[in-house]
Image 1 (cartoon, rainbow, N blue to C red):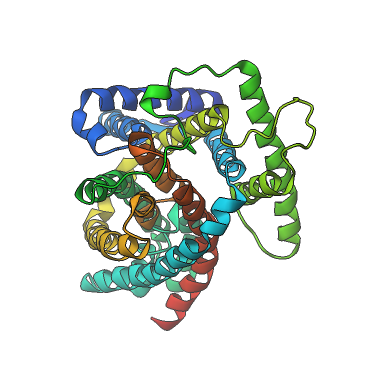
Image 2: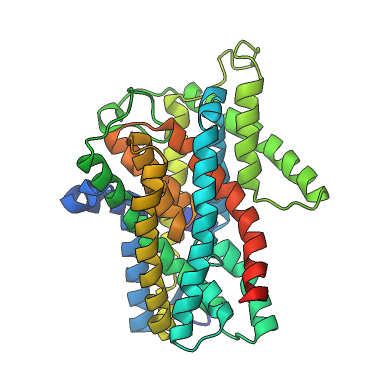
Length: 407
């Protein structure tokens, strides 16, 4: 921890420690405020928002900026998505073929609509097309990473000097809206149509309340960690080979695929030094997934510098308000019917609510909160990450230049 020139900087160790504290804060608040639990608001979202508001208050009263080194956060993201790959079975992947295509088609169509919405609302303020795109897929369905990647080019090529601030502001508030909409949408659908899982199965992330005190041995935990590291190493090698071919993907995406490959291509009887079977869908693996995702999201939200967004509030809030209404409408009236109007469809909707305005981890956190309350949905936890973490980035890489050139 260092303090220089009015900036209080927390290193990676302090950052992850505070992330854990923030996660527990969210749990305590959710346990106390029934409506948050009732609508499946993720605990790290509750804690992260409170922490970011308190940090913003510190800045307003003292002018001291708080910054965090988030290297550990990104490491946790790789951990989480690797667990999702390890938990994926070939049977689920095959059954997810048609739903995957349907969800992907809807998502790409929605991305066109999101950009058109951003451009239209921006025009109401006599703002140029690139500003509308910054309030569209550049920052919303693309997230902070895409906003950071595209903002310098938009600033240079189109003379939008504050492109980075607009992109990050849109991504930040979009993340908040995405975190808050997924759970209520799922609850509405599950309650209205009396939906429930087809059969009781282990969760992909975490454990239901009645199972949270089950025993997990230290060797079970180490076995799961070893499997994650093996998959992540393969993911790193895959990532390096893809870069040679000119295709750049985040490490967590290739680690996800590595987990899928190992789980489904290596026989269960394959000898391991641990003397155990490959730990797919074990309580230890679910525990690691829960810890990784919760801490990642808590650290992401607590690190938001809300004071940097005040000057851009008017146009950004108007664009986000319109985007929110469009996202809710698409989720309820297109995604849910197209995905089958069943329990899996409701969980997918909570995930789509997360990715439509936020990020892949937000989508997964929304689905995790719903699944822990109502039951597992392996299909949702397979197709949503594939669409969000892989296909969206590819589609966005084509859509953004198309809109910049033609609108």
